Each structure stands twice: as structure tokens, then as C-alpha cells.
Image (cartoon, rainbow, N blue to C red; front, side, top):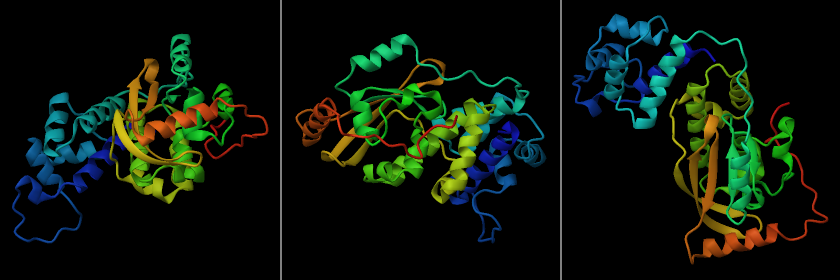
Length: 297
């Protein structure tokens, strides 16, 4: 991914999403060729010249942290968006790396933790949202239709972004699928800012853009989102309706650990308990299948 192009695209997209009236700017009813703020309006709010800001959007100039902070304030960026802007700017200043990023790996300690929490759904995701590990409960909750051993085969690992956009089972799993889809796209946006030189990440984005019009539309929106604690209504094919809180913990080397919990003494907790117990039963006669969530070789 081209860091300077990513920075310019992000600035243009966020500028188009800010209405002048929201910032107290007087427009005198003039007709606008583009939605949102004009370049000169944003430049004025950020305290820089119009030509300087135009070069920044065109990838022809570098900005200091002070200028970036001023632009972030003018665009009313949230904390996650502000960090994303700073990471994009840092990536635009770096030379392209010639070495491929190191493969995602789960440390023995993290693998031990995942296995120890066997009654709580846990999934370990790499920087591209590849599933690097899951415990029995995590597999049962998110992808019981897939081979539970898939994460152990690097060329066949499920990928959560692919599952959300290209797998019907995962789409049906979420009551508010668009909310889950936006969270996945926002997380990939953050990853693209942190790892702009990862060709596999760029390939994943390209694949999803071609394979899903919904992904392409959300990706063009340039919104980012942190994965911390989000509640989702789920319709599990084995145990029915549940409300699950997905909490994301940040681990080493850009990995994330997703933990799914339910409220104590609730119908959701009862459904989750039933699901976990069912997952521990004899699986003879069940033949897992592969899906579009498989990672590329």
C-alpha cells in the first residue's frame, strides 16, 4: 500500500464527511461541487496555507506532528482516527521496505492462555485478521462449520474479514451484520496504517474489494474503529439467540485476543453454556467444511 496515497485518501474522505455548519462556518448558501469542507476551509481551520494542505493531500509534502494535530482537531477526529492519521503520516515518510513482514506467530504463553480459558470463547487474530488460534468454545461460537484444526495450518487459516463478508454462516450469525462489518473494516483500516508495507494485507483488501460491494463501499468511507468492547446480538444455529460482548485485548507483535462473554444469570449465559458443553461432546460423524474464510497460501 502506498503510504502517501493512503494519507491523502484518508484526508479527502474525512474532509468530505464534515459539514461546514457543524463547525460554525458561514456558507451564504453557495453551491458546492463536493460535499463537506473545501480544502481552503480546512487549511484555514488548521492554520496552514491552502497550497501546503493541497500538497499534503496529493502526497507531495510531509507534515509535522503539530500540523497533524491541528488538522485532526479541525476534522473533529476521534482518538482512534487521530492515531490512524499519525500512523499514516509516519508511513508516508518512511521508505518502502524490501523485506516482507515477519509471519504472525502465537507465543507459547498466549497459546497456553487460550487453551486455559476453554469454557470462554477466545480467538487470537493476526494483523490481517487471520485466525491464529482459538479454543474449543471460540471455534464453536464463531465457526463451528469449519475445521477446528484450520488455524494450525498457515496456508489454510480462516480469516475473520473474509468470513464476515464472504461466508453466509457468519453473515447470518450477527443480528446487526452491518455493525459487525463496519467494525471489521475499521480494524483493517487501522492495520493498514500500522503495516503499510504488508503485501498480504494489501492483497486481502483487494480481494475483499472485488468480492464484496459492501466491503468496497465501507472501505472507501475511510472510517476507523478500535476493537475493544462491543455488544452484538447473535443467532447461533445450535443454541439460538444470544447477546455477546466481544472484548479485544492487545497482545504482542500486533496480535489481538478476542474474548466473548455473556451477562451472568441471563438467557445468553445459559445458551453459551449449552454451546460450550455441546462443543465438548463427541464430534464423530461431523465433517467440517472449508469456506471463503480460508487464508491464502
